[in-house]
Amino acid sequence: HVVMIAQVEADDVIGTAVLRWLAEGRGEAIVATTDKDLHGLIANGALAWDHFKSEWHDDAWVRAKFGVPPEQLVDLLALMGDVTDGVPGVSKVGMKTAAKLLGAYGNLDAVMAGAGILKTPIGERLRAERDMLYLSRQLVALKTDVKLGVTWNMLAYESF
Image (tube, rainbow, N blue to C red; front, side, top):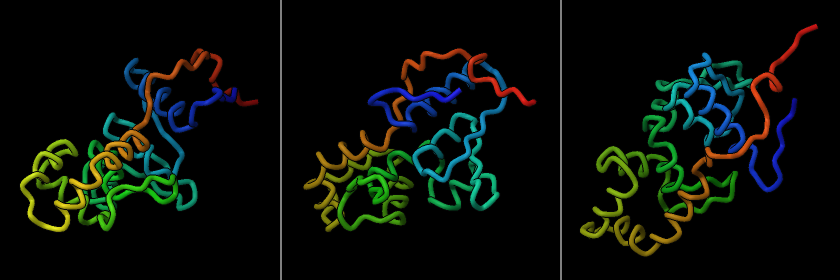
């Protein structure tokens, strides 16, 4: 059964289903994806399978790849942007700088609280691009309260 919901991104449908599955204690949740946004689900106990490289992505993989734990991935992507999804982020902030900021401050709100006292070009850009930064976070965050309109039985795979 294919689930498509008008005006809802596929990432949000997948995120909602995975989190509900895990919350109900139904077993492992494996997402076949290369999408950075969906790797945030690893923080909730999901695993990601990169079907192109035939490799598993877990907490350790996210930390090695992005320099932050999965629960900070949304804030990292908001800071650095995501060209693939058209998310601007903060100008001249790449993955390493974003990871460094999150390592020092813990989350995006704390980074912005600290930006007020940073007398550096990064601090200036964070202050100047605050609205775009929070819009970027909104764009990369998964919406996980989608009404799916299906039951688990409807989604069950039947082999022949």
